[in-house]
Every structure is written in structure tokens, then in C-alpha cells.
Length: 386
Length: 162
Image (cartoon, rainbow over all chains, first blue to last red; front, side):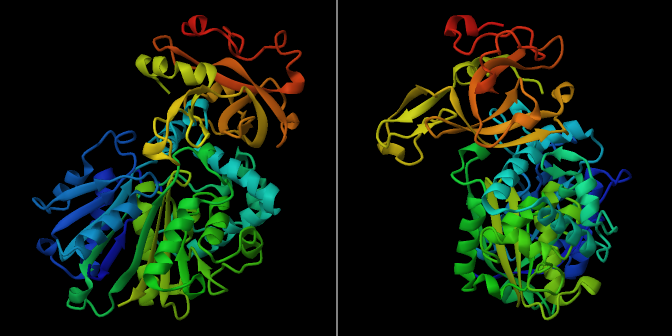
């Protein structure tokens, strides 16, 4: 196995993109990544694309082929990867393995979701399929409901409060103000979160990531050849993935995502690093409670201390550890298939010093954490400048 | 959401009388039914087993933004229930105001209508749970949206038809 680096990345604008189709979003992010990498289309040897629910929502399956076709890259192999909200993360990992194995030198990895054309009850059904359809969605359990069930336990077992959870959303909105690609550019207060309506108690509207259209792409290259393309490639120094029960009720513990802990332990081992070495991390805050659990499960804070750490501002930009500088899923938006790749693009910019007003000082080591469903898949990657 | 008839038919044992599985090698119970014991794998010996119909609320929420098909019920309470054999199960809590639902409350299974999409699709039935304090009045106070309610311990034969 050889080293793999990101030599370019790009995003579409995230948000309610009513003027843009599914394929428009793919092209917008794909071209941005190719231009950033300074490569020609003919140098790309394969495509791995993350997408969760194009069939259920847009009605389009076989999107790997569609990526290749509309990016003008036929006839190279193009494969769709699906792991619910971790579809982007597993696509990135598939691309990584393809290059690390020596099969290809340069591959394009992308993620996309087109969601805002549809009624929110229909989107809830599509996303609900990320859990156990026959035993959760069948009884009306939406995704917010599953995380709400975890939140209630976290509050009981560790004294986490609704204000602590709300502080994650507040911080992420503050970061997104400086991210031109983000869906929201407005700051919110803890009171705003507390006064927003319930989606699934105790989670309120502003505890939840929004429904978003968007796409993201990166170009991966063997590290030994990456400097031919640019001065500052970002190497993926660890990539780990883990699985857990599809159904939340089958978990032994509901105040952690076990798959995150397993993937994180593997990633730290691969990189020979520890949590305190991470300068900047994009974590999967599909709900505010998910960010609280993520910063615990990734080892940044002890179990039960994630809420207080967030409320005290320890995860804000340039504080103890900078979490979700992009604005996270909450404020950048969460086009589910794109999120795992968007996280990698943000970390690439941070490590290249290109994150503008949301730049983390002296960022050397970055991490992405992408979760599928209520935690049945987790992907954790660690990055460093090559 | 629409469920095809064969799916509804296949789900009858677990949705109507909590049929799960038991591994005689490690003595663990599982719900939903699993053919392979994840602890013992090929050393496991798995057979069907009905789960106990009483348990304790482990966590709960009230859903205000329902998926399609549940709009008319919203908001509705959902809970994770720890059954008396320690197996956890997600289910709706019925026949009680939200304020009475607490972690630790005792509940028992009811058999209820879960959904009916439209005139052309089948009505789905399954388990829901009610607080045990209310169980004495449940037979007369069953004023939920369901029209064809059956007792929890309906026989297999009567439970298999609408």
C-alpha cells in the first residue's frame, strides 16, 4: 500500500438550489475540483461517487455512470457508493483504496444529494431508510427521533442540557458566516435554538441539520506523484471505517456511537497520533447531540464532558480544538451524499491555509468524521500536509 | 409509506406477537429475529422465541415532524423499551398524555393499527405499548385512531387477517 493525497477539491454552493439539477450540482463541484487540482480530465482514471437517495428522491439510479457521462469522462469506470449519510465518506475511502493499491494513480471522488425539490415528509421517509425500515421507520421513527432518543439518555446519564446541545448549533452558525459555500450565513443564539419548535423532543428545529442540495469533489493521487500537480497536496494519513447494528434499539449503549469509537481508534493507530494531536476536525453534527457525542467518541473529551466543553466555547474556532470550521452539517447544510467529501475539502483548505476568516492558526493535522444512519457506519480519516 | 402485501405477511410473526430469536449456545435473545447469532456465529443454535410483552421505558421522544403516512397522528410519542428479558425494542406509546411518559415507566404490549396509506393499500398492524397503570382501563378507553383493535394475545389464526 502506498500513500494517497488530495491534489484538489471543490464544492458546489450548498443550499436550496432550485435552479440546479442533480447533474448540474455534480458538474459544478467536479469542475471546481479538477480546476483546483490543475489536471486534465484525461488524467483521471476512475470515479467513485457517494449518493444516498437519488433513486428515492430524484428517481435517478445508476448515478456512477451519470457522473462519468456529464463530467465528460467516459469511458473510465465509475462506481456509486452508498452508506446513507456516510456515502461520501465511504466513496472517499473506496477511492483511497483504489489508489493505495496501485491500481490507479489519479481518481476523482465525489458526493451529491438533491433534496429540496421534495416535500419534507417524503425526505423524512428517504432518510428514514438509513435506519431499520421494518422496525424503526415502520412505526414512524424519523431520524431526528432516533437522535432524540439518544439525547434523552445522554441528558439522563451525564446531565447534558438542552443549552449545551444548542451551543453546538450556535458555534456552527458562527463559523458558517465566513464560509461562502454554506447554506446559512446568519448567527443564532442559544435562545433562538431553545425557542425553535420541536422536531422530536428534546431536539428542536435549530438542533437539526437542514435539507440541502449540494455536491463536493476531490481528486486523489498517489502521494509519490502528488507534488507533480501542486506544491501543497494534503495526504490522507489514516482512513478507518466501522459498522454497527442498523437499528438503534439493538445497541448496547445509546450515549455513544460505537462505530465512531472503533473507527477513531483504528485511525489514531494508523496515523500514530492521539486525539490531542488533532488541530481541526469536521465532525458529523447531523443533530446537535451528534456533535456532543462525536467529540467524546473521537477522544477529544471524556464521555459526558462534550456538552460542557461546547457550552464553554472550547470547540470554537482557534480555541482548544476547532470543530466544524465550515459550519458543520448544521449551517453549511447536509446534502447527505456530499457531506463526507465536503468535510475533506474543508480540511484540505484548512491545512493549506486557505480557509480565510475561518482559518485555524497553524493547522497541521486535520480529521474528518462521517456517520451513516444512527451510527451503523462511521468513517474517520486523518490528514496532514504532504 | 406503502408496504407491499408479501412484506406485511412476512412481518406477521414479529409484528403481531414479538417473535424474535434465542441462541441456545450463549442464551441470548434477539429482536428482531436473526438467523445468525452475532456472538456465536456458526457455533450458535438459533430458534424462534416470543419476546416478553412487558418492559420498562429506556428513552422516549415526541415526534412533531412525521414521515409521510403519519401526519394525522403527529405529535406522537415513541420510546425505546427494555423488555423484561433485557432486549430493547422501539415502539409507539399509546393511550396516555405525554407528561405521564417517563424513563423507567412500566409498559405492556398492545396490538394496534400502525398505518393505512390509502384505499388501495393494506392496513398494517403491529405492536405498540401502553403504560401499565392504565392497563386496567385500556379495554374501554381504547379511543385511538384504530378501528379494528385486537387484544395483545390474539391467536395466530385470528391475527393474520385484517
